[in-house]
Image (cartoon, rainbow, N blue to C red):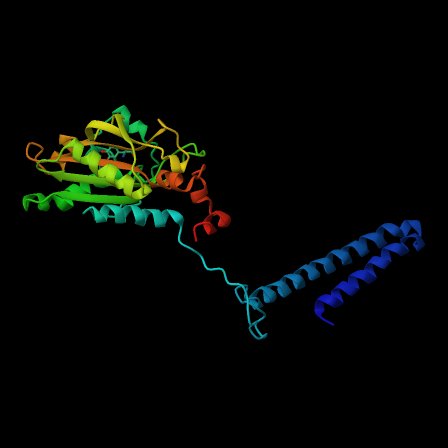
Length: 319
Ligand code: DAH
């Protein structure tokens, strides 16, 4: 008999003692009860300790990752579930590949940035209300998880500036993860993905950008598309546009059903100047838009929250 079993038996015996209380003369019952209670408390405490000790041993003995008991032979077949790539990573690659085929370099964005790259380098004037348009998170040290991939524009311009001196152009895309302090709902997430594009040369024009974007979206959705632009406002572009595509029939769209896919425009001379590029000589355009949104339309998803949900049934659909 184990120590624990012995204690439990003792407790049982003790409990039968309570049944005898009516046989005790009334004046002695109080003392009898107190003694019995004290013994019971002591045994219960011993039991608790013994159980704790036994539990410790058991926990160490179990290998929860083992497919069967440690001393049993392996079963001939046991179900294995391999993980899979997150659908957004697949989309990110697909987006980057299309731009690569069009001659763009790919540079990775970062997960933590600073005030300069988030705002100053993008021509946001100090105290300008446009800064409030980006619901940024901040760390206690004042760093910023980027609210858009545009934080990389200044780095791209500086890193590739020598190409201009060689008489070539800058053509870079930057896919990356971005963060916003959003009220989360079916179309807004606090964490999502964007792809930024930056192009600079001596003689590029807004119409070149529209051609590049049309080409990208037609490759991505594998069909001809109608496009439209409308005026927008971003401190880092002048003029600024919102780029829209007509929702394809095959994806449930009706005529005139235009969706805003990204923000874009001619790079503001101040942004070029800050990176040491002469805006009198060179011109550029840039754009940036959400990848989650692209994928939602492609797969007919109604709720962006699936992507960050960790829901295995959802993820298995993309295996
Ligand atoms: N960064 C902007 C946003 O997330 C989108 C954008 C607009 C990017 C214009 C650009 C641009 O590069 O030129 O709202």
